[in-house]
Length: 195
Image 1: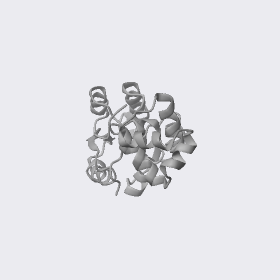
Image 2 (image 1 turned 90 degrees about the horizontal axis):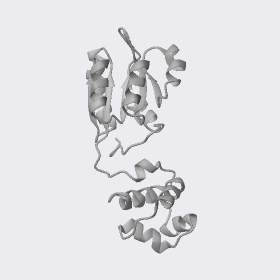
Image 3 (image 1 turned 120 degrees about the horizontal axis):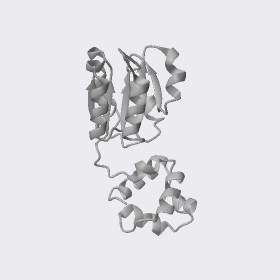
Image 4 (image 1 turned 90 degrees about the vertical axis):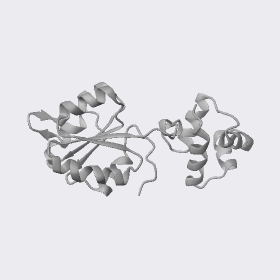
């Protein structure tokens, strides 16, 4: 358990507009137990953490986050103009993220072998390389990488879903489109203060 648990618990409870007492009743514990968790005086056991996550409708990985981890986001597209325009948009939506762009899929895969990638925006048609294959390579490096396809071709959508990706976006990349996709990630992470 990390030191940020109490802050995340309290923040999420406030966001949901429920009191410590209401949360305690839902979890079948005392209000004092919830208070101690939020103050950082006590740490619930693993089973209770799972129950808290379900009760607050939050992914357990977010609840257990250390709060200091910078999400690592990559965008892979063989056209530099997409990277030049896309990276600032991604940074505006996920301000605490480290965003790196790649025009060569092989460079992106090598980067993923050396760094944990939380989210990858992948073009599907990249010369001789398919983004569908790049997705598989990234998932081989880290099965919890969220992959979102970014393409101009709707006909790839059925193939894209077979790869275990989290989402599919038609170009151009937009802030609203990213926000919508972030709400559907398979493996959520802390997003910072979203604009």
